[in-house]
Length: 349
Ligand SMILES: *Cc1c(COP(=O)(O)O)cnc(C)c1O
Image 1: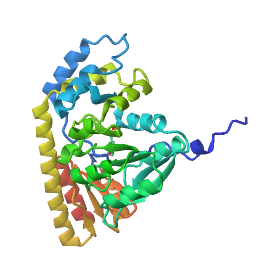
Image 2 (image 1 turned 180 degrees about the horizontal axis):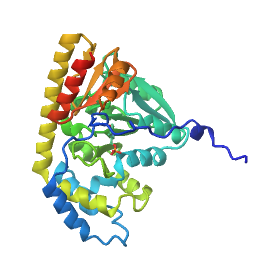
Image 3 (image 1 turned 120 degrees about the vertical axis):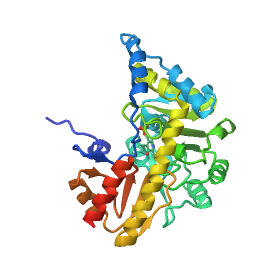
């Protein structure tokens, strides 16, 4: 036997979410709000009518229509994807050539660097300030200096929970002519979206996902919003049946319940604020955190030397969070889940 994997593949490890059954999952930034019986009934009825022996609509028209109504963007700017993850993969593989330079940041979503490496791009990493804010002027000159063909970042950022204001994003986009991929996965939790500017740029792609605020992480669905030239290219480059009929129907229905989604977002934000206050109280009592970052998202990012201890101890209490080197990230849960977390932390510390 002599087959050997190439270097880029042999370096890879399969994505490793936390395994096992934990009572409280606060590790993946999902929505804690279940679909609910009424909506689930409606979904079941509609799915029962689908012709599953037929291929799905390649352009997911129903889902795209609901998306464009919910986010008030024209349909001609919208491409549906099998999670925004698939869209990131298509963009990095098709809009660039191997050996091209791209810019990502640290800290930021790990998939950008992952796909950059998979598609043999030179990824230059822009270092944020010590407090994880981004200086737009420095970022722009970093991109120019490294002759970036693409800049990709999340806003607000996973994992730092911080965000760039719309004027700052505008400055960055106005200053660069390379492709700019702006991942607004968490922008439903903040009010600085750049979506309404999409018609003004021919080098911008904004990514949205149904996995967070919309509460559909269990199906895979995301959207790319871009000018017509890029949108046509994306539609031509994606695999023809990238999203399935069942997921398309679910997204079409769920995104049409606009008030319900907005109420869910408000509930999620309320709980995150309450969680922030409880975590500050924990810190007042135990002096265990160096910093709780000012979140613009549905999760908290916390600097702490105890990151490993807290992470491991919570797991033994059947509570899952994420740890990074020197930090923990905690998605907000329901009131009950959050209070289980706080009780457990109080006991552990
Ligand atoms: C969760 C997340 C996504 C969503 O990815 P999907 O593939 O749509 O589930 C995208 N970008 C960031 C920064 C995220 O944190």
